[in-house]
Length: 135
Image (cartoon, rainbow, N blue to C red; front, side, top):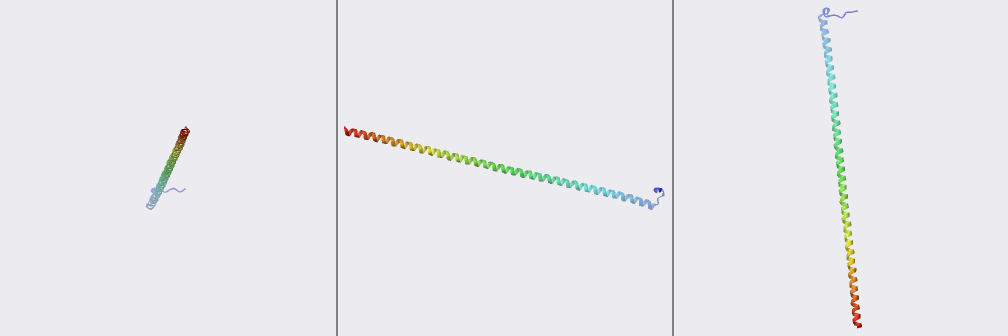
């Protein structure tokens, strides 16, 4: 079995080479650590950006849904108001028609009564005249 060389039986060149290897290994580890940290940071930022975009999209969709619901509610209110106005107009027209019919009926009845009274008066006058002539 070969023994690992110890510092005591290593030459200066071997010591320098060992130091250079150790320094290179440390530099490689530091570079790998820095690269891993940069990758983790980039992944975190990408995840945060995606989460922010998803939240913004959800907020936009909620706002659009609220606007659509408001528009639908306004349209329903307008339709209800129009229906109420149409009903009021129909009720007014029906009331006016009923009033006109009642006035017409009253006028017809008054005319018939007046004609009847005039006929009765004329008949009575004719009877009186006939009686006077007979006497």
